Length: 297
Image (cartoon, rainbow, N blue to C red; front, side, top):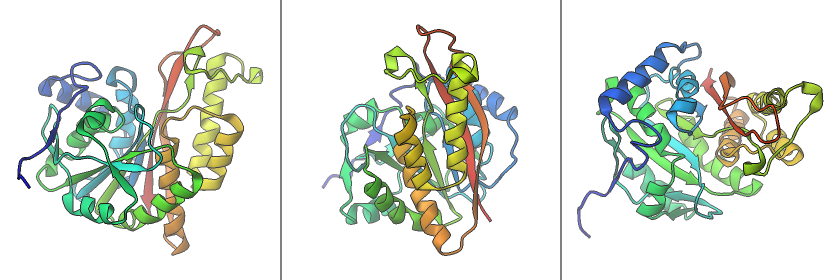
């Protein structure tokens, strides 16, 4: 075995966000300065993974709830957009690069997860093609910069899980969620609306199309805030809302349900909602973004 360090490059820098560390830092600071830290310290956050020009401002509302003084390990659960995956996968990398500074993967936790037999190993190519985890790396680096040598990350690529698999991974990860020194980042956009997404649900009673989309999203967000995995599954079955991180969200909800059995009190609140554009006719399209945080009492 060689001791060569495997690095995952910041493959979407220069296109989805700035490749310049100083420019990126200034942008992140600007967005964070406009958000309030109302429910710190977050144990988990849900935040979007689109290009920062679209969702950087929204994501700041979730990252503002992160407390770097207590966080020592950051789990990042992102959906797989490019490869078919029925389970969850771990990265072959040791280090994830960002234009701010490099983030180190927690190989001890990776070894423990690997031992369960529930995880696949993705290729470095798959890892670098995927944006759902990478889009959280600069924000993680920024939120944690005051303790940048004192934390590690645990990236997990989440496949198209069955309900029973979501529950299985939720149970497995619940022991990590119970630890106050861990933070879970759940990577998800909300409704992808328009013919290019093959999703054009429209409730005319809500008025303009974009109002219908907001109503549909906020119905789902309200169900997530109830922290009931079955209700969320039923909502998705009924409306087929194109929430791309529905499986990472499902895993979080099952992990929370597991911890609530032992009497742990938790609350989830959404803090911001945005759309990439306001759809008014059938030719339009948009993606929705939501930012929220889970706290443990």
